[in-house]
Length: 280
Image (cartoon, rainbow, N blue to C red; front, side, top):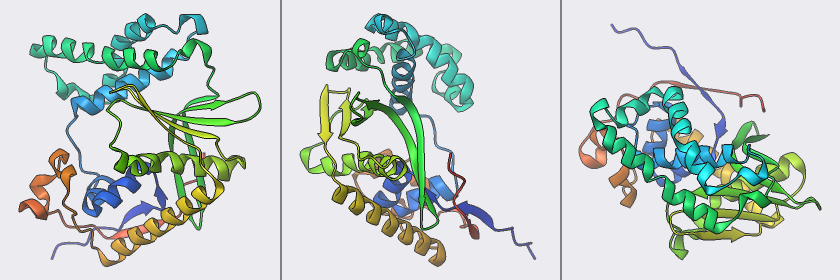
């Protein structure tokens, strides 16, 4: 008889990306959050990570030095740091693919050029960059990492997020803004101040998506998150994370083990929920 494995501990916590996973496909949520299955590095996603890293460190420069040329000069060093921090990124390019790697690195310049056409960082002094935020309600921790928080002299808060892709079709704008409302909710609950403006910057086409949240918006977002967590706990209780086929399936790394494509998921471990992690 095979000895039963000990329960897998699972924290009561939710980030915008994992919330999006569960809404799009509960099985994908399971693969990423519970099974923690590895996914191959994607050049497009890694490019986004690299551009984010450059923009974060650009604001560490003195204001006059925040130029496009300086941003471009930061690319090789930031890429080296990313590869050192995440060994799996080494699989993107072999030693024989140096030319491909150079072309990929050069493709990161375009989003940076678009960023500088959208705003001038020499005139900005962010209050926070890559800020981890979190708060707890009903035993569940909601949190994530905000690209940038700007605070005006009069105390008004602007939450900024960079997207290296193109802006969404108008019918999908609410879905795109969900992440920002999530962050605004956490800021409101932890600081007692509702951000004045939520701003998505799409570096793929130079578009802004802006929203001014209200208290009603954020209360509704909180209710949605709590309902989403209830659905996740129900899926854990029933041991049922159904796949949900959509246009996003074409980008999924787990088609081989997805029932929608004739695959079989690995056996779901026994899960033991533990309290939310301590807030940072």
